[in-house]
Length: 264
Ligand SMILES: Nc1ncnc2c1ncn2[C@@H]1O[C@H](COP(=O)(O)OP(=O)(O)OP(=O)(O)O)[C@@H](O)[C@H]1O
Image (cartoon, rainbow, N blue to C red):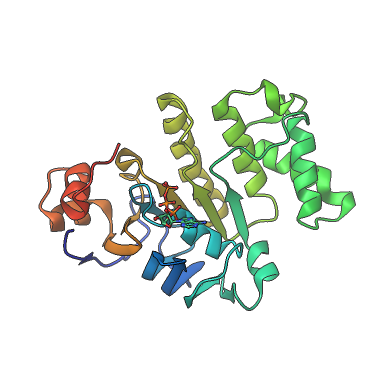
């Protein structure tokens, strides 16, 4: 186990990121057990508007548990989570309304068309009947999916399905986008395209992004990386600063030095 490396957040959005303004996600001393097993142990992290924060950790580090608490699906044992200033434990519905979520597994209805999936989600988000079609159309345009509007989700490649899910997550103008290992099932070209898309979208919408992954090569473009290991934050800061502080030549080396574990 490496020592804790804590580095300052980038002071200015230059270089592509956001990083200014009140945090859209604030996680403070969060803990959670499953029976006798400690899944999260005093986790602190923040995401600013327009900022991409990668949550990097090996399998079992606690990433999914953290996401479930932020989404209001399970309670924490201790600590607090606020989304856009709203405390999840006190006002779960309001906090959920400020979130856009892309789950690890595809959650599109494969028998519906792309446009139908988006309109259905708009209805779930409480968007008025008269404006749902416009909200779905705006989402299609944002992701360059207009020509796919009539395609059944089943006919789309994995990369295109993810783009539809991103489009869907942005309906209702969320303040924070939660991406739970979104590129796990994608081929390398689709992974690269997805990263570029998310970078573009955070500039376009100003939403913050928390991106969970166990793939070190995915996090180099993030504004900040938070490394989670066995439920604890063991390093946090811009990728280059983590590499420098851990004395590695690359983020992969730094990750190995800090966790003592292999990563893909
Ligand atoms: N429902 C559960 N019951 C008991 N233990 C659980 C449960 N869910 C997770 N755990 C344990 O909590 C720890 C954190 O798991 P979690 O799924 O949050 O990690 P993760 O970083 O998302 O891993 P992965 O990348 O494999 O999804 C692990 O030790 C896991 O075995």
